Length: 283
Ligand code: CAA
Image (cartoon, rainbow, N blue to C red; front, side):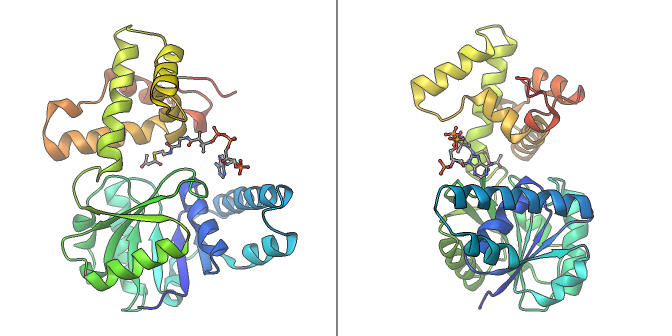
């Protein structure tokens, strides 16, 4: 199972980061989005990251240009007919992902692996809408993708060892560290991280401490690079709520109930850093 050409679906924060690390590792990449402006914004982010590396003398201007030249714009899923691996990083919504996977399954050659960067949804359920569930797999990158080493690799019920191995080898090639995980809500990363963030929000909601104090406790006391409330803003409060709901529904256990304050912020449109306001203000 040789992987040469890769397509990344979604040019947002995660998709553009994934396209960047794939192109940096020498792969030809289609970066696909439904909107031309989203592609342009994603590419601008990649260019900014690479320019910073040039400034810091970690790469030359020629190397930067070679990496950018490996990224092609795609505004049509039909480009899937030319690739060996597709990494979907579209919006975190099962219905939208199912629609995309059905289309990709019809277009992509039979050898093409379909991976999703979902942070909590079932790989097995998504695989079931395709005629190739054995070639469907989860590749969960962490944010910011160019910096974070981990990729959770999630096997669906039908994923073959051969497909797992190909994705594991690719992950190492991207200079990331693959960790194998089974298909349960939130996998490992978000099963552990999100209840901690949710509990931090409860701590604020119940008036135990201020937001700054809660973040300081976790930064200075546990050596976390960011406090949980700042991290929630960075991930996106809408995403945090969606993941808590996936855990709550998937396990049917009240310990995963989302904090009402989190829901209130999301209802207000306070999504964190991306909307300019969450627990903190970013204007
Ligand atoms: N893209 C690319 N590079 C970035 C970046 C970005 N968005 N943000 C920061 N960096 C780079 C900087 O360029 C800098 O690199 P150099 O020193 O080599 O120049 C380096 O990261 C450190 O950046 P800063 O000094 O500006 O800031 P920092 O020391 O606070 O680090 C951080 C920033 C790496 C984001 C750090 O705060 C951190 O590790 N935060 C926690 C991140 C985390 O927990 N991520 C997981 C989120 S959960 C998730 O992704 C899963 C999910 O499903 C929700």
